[in-house]
Image 1 (tube, rainbow, N blue to C red):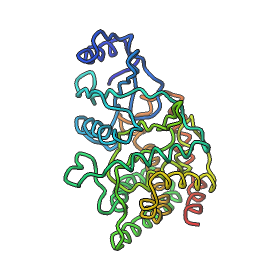
Image 2: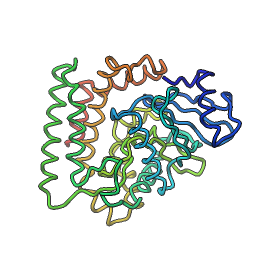
Image 3: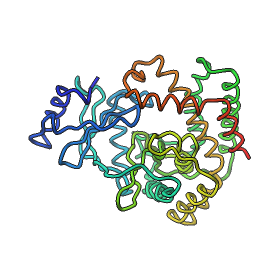
Image 4: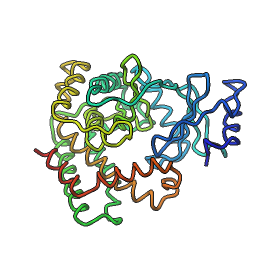
Length: 345
């Protein structure tokens, strides 16, 4: 496994980068603080670039496929103007078992919520306005058309396999009830004469994946899970409790007024026609996305205890302590009951 703090490993990485950036040495690759479970990041000094090194695939894809998927995500979203540009792809090898990407280094800080929610909304609108290409050209990116609700529920079913792995019966029962609701929603969407809108979506849109620059633009930096799906899910994931309480540098709690301002900024950015198509899906998408994040937390806890790729031993101790506290909160019976009440009222 690549170690960004190993001088030997950084020297090997510099050798792989010299074809495009001559003269690089280990000292020019500066490890950045660990932000999440899936990647290490190293700045390339003086180049305005970072190396993004996958530690695992959140979707359990083989290394080559996962790397190409992520690279294509960066390429497809580039026309939005609010994401890093891809500069190079390093294929998997002995040093980099999952390869690496070289992308723009984005200068910025974590969003200040709720004040900067409109900036997040405008960024998501820019991504969703990228022209949607015909289905035959969408691979390798996942395509949730024609029923993005059913496609999301399929992902929930995969996460829900872990509900029988040490989860308290009361919690498992509540989440299985929500899963039954999600299946009903998918069937209703299938039968509806009005199809859900499909755009390019970022998927993992919690506020910690945005960096706000000095120009006030909130750039989205994690393009591992880009796909064609329902944009209302992106909006939900940017504003739910399980998202605004996820990143250590954000930790905000939003109210109804905050949410209204967020949706208002998004509606203004996409225009009345696009908003009218999307608005009926806003409320159900929030409940569906909350269930997705909560079941992900259940899955993470099980995999961190059993899968070497997900082992907490490989994560910075302060970050793992934070993740564990968030997972404990999100999967607590009291939190689940409160969120169910909020999302169904």
